[in-house]
Each structure stands twice: as structure tokens, then as C-alpha cells.
Length: 156
Image (cartoon, rainbow, N blue to C red; front, side, top):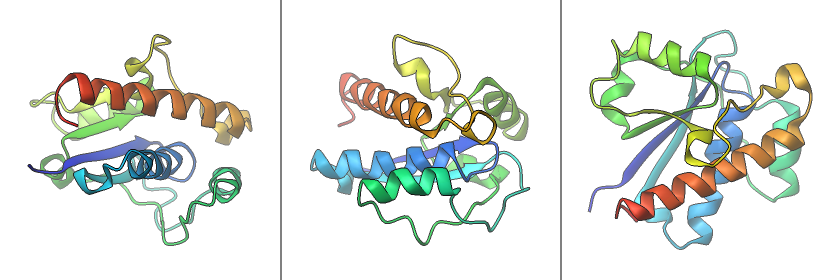
């Protein structure tokens, strides 16, 4: 069976999407399913390209004992469309920007993270809110819902 390839996406790839990337990696490892996944993250904007994870996200991941030290922000490219099965955006602007980049979304790969929960809304950007704990809660709920979706679809 092919691996499930997921790219989490936010504006700068230093706060929300790397948090989602590393929490999802930990989540599937805990489920004994890490070998079934390829998980990455990227930005819709290149302003942070090459930069490390934001200290607010870093604190949460460090608290959980998750190594993210080699992660550097990268900008999503048109060529990424063929490399992932799912592009999971954090907010409506991310979705719009991805669909623009990908000339629409011909294969229906672009999704909003919290659409996999009963609280369908954007994950607020902690770069502006400063509330990384709320982002952690939202991302965790989204990951749980996304994994349940994948189970229901028979993919895991």
C-alpha cells in the first residue's frame, strides 16, 4: 500500500503548519502507523523561508519531547501538488492561496484542518494572537478528526 502523503500549510510555515506536521508525526507513531505516512509542512508565502520553527511552537513541541530541530520553513511550489495526497490548510486564506497556486484543486486535495471536526473554522494564527496553547488545542483536535476521516475512508 502506498503511503499517505500529507502537507500541512499555513502562511509562513513557522507556527501552525510545523506544529501540525510534528504533532501528526507523533500521533501516527503512537498509533503504530508511522510507516504508512509521509508528513511535511510548507508555507503559502516565502517570507519566512529558511527560518526555524517559531519559539512559541518550539516550546510546545519541546514540552512534548518532539524533535523538530532540522525543520526550516519552505514555500509551497506548484510541483508539490503531485507529491501529496492532502494539503491541509489552517485558514481560509491558506485554502484560497493554495487553490490559486494549484490552478484550482483538480484532484480535491486541498482541505481545511478544522473541517475534520464539528467546529469548522480557521485555526487562528498565533503569530498575531500570541495564543500558542489554543493553536495546540485546535491543531490536536483537527489531527484527531483527520485521522478518524482517514480511518472511515479505509486508508488506515
